[in-house]
Length: 338
Image: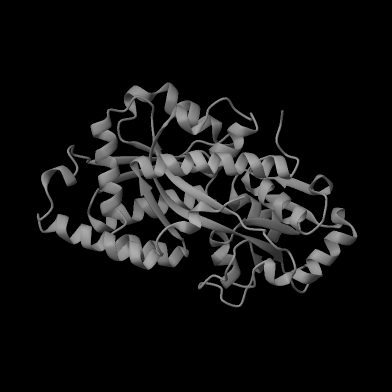
């Protein structure tokens, strides 16, 4: 599986470029076509998963940064849960005419779920505005674990994979389940032997880990930074090709003998189908201005998010390739439904 999200400019370079754009816009030095053509005085952020998970954290981070930057004061977050995100998607589609100010937070999840025919909608049924972040998956255990490090966990899984219960904030066949399956396959363990308990969002999955309902989570590690920093959960390894600056002591899976176990969860913002192109552009302009602000950088740095901002054709092209890559991964791990 090719990891195209790793081919983007470094977060530091992109933030510098966006700051320049933001400064020029604030000074009135950009041409009129570079600024939003429509006034946006309120934003509704729709999340198809529970409070505390990655999509919810992203929505509330966008809310905070929009308000602190002064770009938009009236910003609300709604969690409309159910069906692995399908309830929120269906609501956005069915009420499209009155959703002119709504941004739905989703991304990799909608691609995986539609590929596995868990629901009929795909990302093409809504309007992609932009990608925002690409979150690296990590392998987490609780303080009751008998596994001192990632090598010990891998040894236990190879000996008997059913001794370790996995949990995730996505349904069976969803992105967290797929991430765990990829790790097991690359470690030489049959993914079908995995015990996986699905939770409604990363917040509930973390509660399951801390309560020892499950012994391991494979989820975007940035969702768990509070528990990691508070020594409630231990991050054993990353599904990436290099270590992360927020957790420099944590090895990659390749370093502990599991090669090519690389995966990220892309978070993106969508609008309802049928939104006028000028309105979509206005929201794209707003979000590009947002990620150039100190308020967004404060939110991003605190959360440890990896910036991956694309819009327009670049965002569309990414999702086309992302879907191809995820289809191949589902087939490779035996999780693609016919």
